[in-house]
Length: 179
Image 1 (cartoon, rainbow, N blue to C red):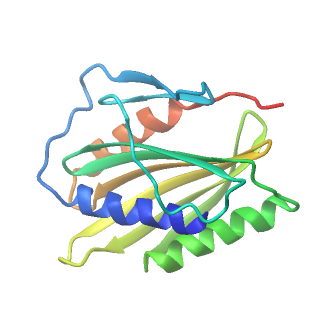
Image 2: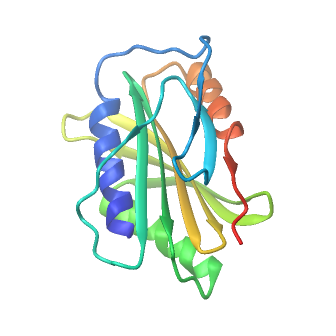
């Protein structure tokens, strides 16, 4: 499962290093997952990213993304995860992501969303072509599901605009309580 998260970051980094085209002042689109597990706002309709690397038949994985020039968004979720110790699970997920993408952890905070435990990690990543990309990822455990919500932007993007875009994205996330 963590390998799928890492693949997402590799895809994000490649997309985020393309030409600029930023739309933060336009009306964003509300996206609700097909199963109704979450909703959020994004500049465009999120698209389903197909995943053929399933290694655990019991865990269902879905990933949606939107890339806009110098930045991108990804939300993915894993259903039917087994978590005996949420803190260790979140720490292991963080460590796996940072290691696999060869990123530098810039910061981490314990967070929650509607009472569900989570982590926010911020990383710096240097792409193969030398561009520096910043990634902010929020990971939440909700019942038997794990949600990973990421915003990635080029470091040379206007800092105020990058912050405004990230705040708008993250503040819009609603995850359905699972029984």
